Amino acid sequence: MSKRFYITTAIDYVNGQPHLGHAYEKVVADVIARSRRSLGQEAFFLTGLDEHGQKVQQAAASEGKEPQAYCDELAAAWKSFATKLQLTNDDFVRTTEKRHREVVQAILAKLHAEGHFYKDIYEGFYSTREETFLTEKDRRPDGTFDPAYGEVIKLKEENYYFKLKPHQQWLIDYLEKNPSFVAPEYRRNEVLGFLKHNTLEDLCITRPANRLNWGIPVPFDPNYVTYVWFDALVNYISIPAALGDVIAAKSVSYQPSTINHELSLWPADLHVIGKDILKFHAVYWPIMLKAMGAPLPKQILVHGWWQKDGQKMSKTTGNVVDPVAIIDEWGLDAFRFYVLRELDIGPDGNWTDTGFKGRYSSELANGLGNLVNRSLSMLKRYRNGVVPAVSNELATDANRVIAETRSLLEQNQLQAALLAIWSLITRANQYVDHTAPFKLAKDPQQSTRLDEVLYNLAEVSRILAVLLWPFLPTTAGKIYEQLGLTGTPDQFSAAKWGQLQAGHTIGSPAPLFPRKDI
Ligand code: MSP
Image (cartoon, rainbow, N blue to C red; front, top):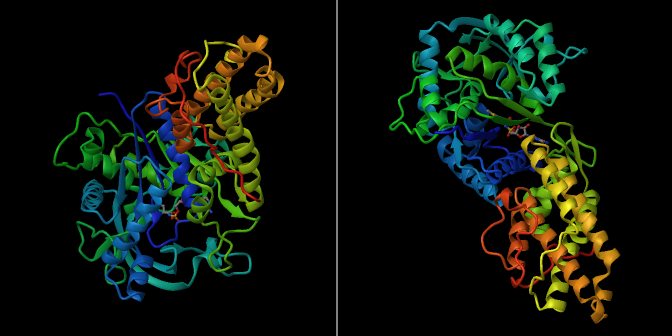
């Protein structure tokens, strides 16, 4: 069975509010998954929730709920958020599920048996909010800890540690030899810089159950639960293993109920994550996998963070972008378009309402919407909606954009792909202005010329639907429907000039992006 393109997102903390940052990451991964499927590859897209840890335990207690019941309620809201974004995820992992828990325990048992852990006493500082141990190095110049750590307490505790030091040089060599393992390149350099200038501290992978019990019990010591990150990272391989993927199951020493030879997922092709969790993914995760004897994922794709109006988004100041409110007012595709067009995968971005409305009116309503609407309306008005004979006037421009888009999608260059697609929209809108079909229609001598122009515009509209489908699935579907075509424009192979048949009758044109008073 051929390997499927396996793509994941970070799993969100169940007790957080779904916001722009979460939505962005999921949409990026969704567009990549859809692109691969459109290009003819089988893809498997996994997203989900991180549900263990002290914060969840405390939040549940403060609402007088059992942690599991509390998580179940929130998980329902997160799942409907994924639906709202029209994510094409093939599975949705929750770290409180039995299928995940069993794999985490299998890995812990295996690594313990093979001598990767040791027990030690820690005495020092601990951030409850981040559930992490702090050292002197974490102090700021004035001696205090970053407020992001919340309350920092003194703690003396015995725990299990995972030996990282023996793998440090191997990881440096791996990153050197595999330059595309972390993208963009400056993030890889950041990891390499960190590894070359610091000695890795061994990772504390347990918490005593009497202090924190909302976690996965450690199979070899009932007094402990697993540290949340050791639990969370495993989701990427636990789900393939539980679904019967041969390499995943073997790597984690887990016997799934059935082996599924049709499902070839591991190693993952792409982990899409935000810049704040780079160290967990590019240092701890590869070492965990190496210790297990599992193949490493092919690439970690790191995106930047969104701000709003140049400021950090924060619930306390009310400075947040609520994707659901935007989607309800402007439509999902307007939201997907703005985040992908505005922000390349890598740098930080800044949401402004003015910027959002500007792109809506210039690029969506006046650019794409106007092109498709006037093209199809004229075809309806002047030719009763019947497609004229094939004409190739815009074929060269379209073919260039098709080739560019294909190559950019293969490289996950989503913003650049949108720019390429929009160059065709601009070209076709200029073509309408130059050829002036509304004038041609008044002169019976120009009937053949009008046929040519109308064909080119209808065919560009059809090709745009295919190119845009991974980004704007609803809009792409509407264009197809207005063209009177059946099916979904979800196969890139349909982006081939001249497939719109002469004599075909289109459907009814309607504005794709209604103009709003803004
Ligand atoms: N649960 C961990 C991830 C475990 S993955 C094995 C976590 N959760 S999170 O809910 O805090 O973040 C989920 C993802 O959203 C992360 O990749 C994070 O970078 C991303 N974002 C959170 N806020 C963001 C912005 N303001 N902008 C862009 N992405 C941001 O970390």
